[in-house]
Image (cartoon, rainbow, N blue to C red; front, side, top):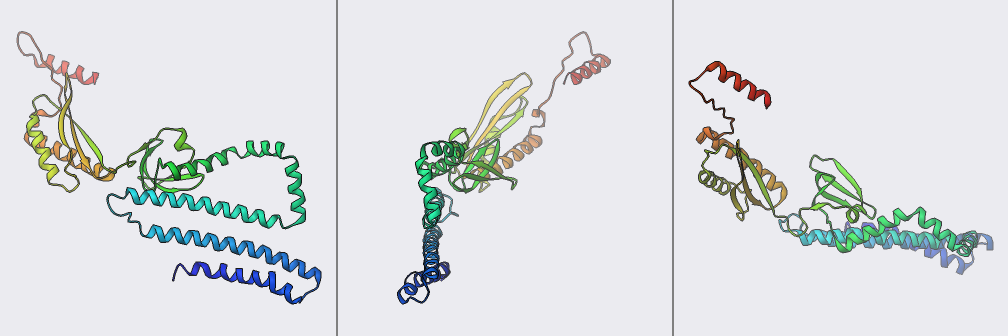
Length: 321
């Protein structure tokens, strides 16, 4: 019933236009001048109401189709693909319907017809001028159409653009709205996605790997850290039970770099999982291996221990830092 309401007014106007266009002329209720004005008005109303009816039908069909797409499920790649295509194609068709309708209405007036003939006579020069003036708009519209077909981005994709993390919130013919993590909106032209590199974290799947770096002293027990990471991952629903790795990725004079690698179903979950693992591993080291926290050693060699010299050396090391 709520979809039918969209058609009530355009259908009513269509019936009125048919009445003005045909019945008044048939029964000759007005004189010639008035009849011509009424006929023209009826034709304009007929084109406008038909275009309105067509646009309402397109939007209703799209909404009925999109309502059957489940965007809440975890694996919603197919649903987001169709939603993106329908959103962009709807805008393209509505744009074409409006342009064609305006053109048909304008061509009904003799002055506009004569102007059109004059423009066609100088179409070469006019085409060049219009082409230069509207090249950016035309390029943006074509890019919007390309997005609908090739789909480098989709609705609700997680992207990194201009060093900002966000989700694709809206795609139009000329621009894309990216909802940043802190609720700001980043507006970028559609041509951006074909001219500059960007990251799409959900292009083929929402699954993503998260990393946590821990820096410790050489005395830490790596096996104990691995067991603790496994225990922590198994205790939280944030982990999708696929990737669980802990490795020493660097060793320098002041300590070692440990990388914890884990997997999650999507990037927001991966962020929460990384924060959880980082906090808990640091707490584990603090409680069980406090001597393995990062530190700077100063060794004083010589015939005896001189507290004054040791203090001066420590002071100099602190200044260097």
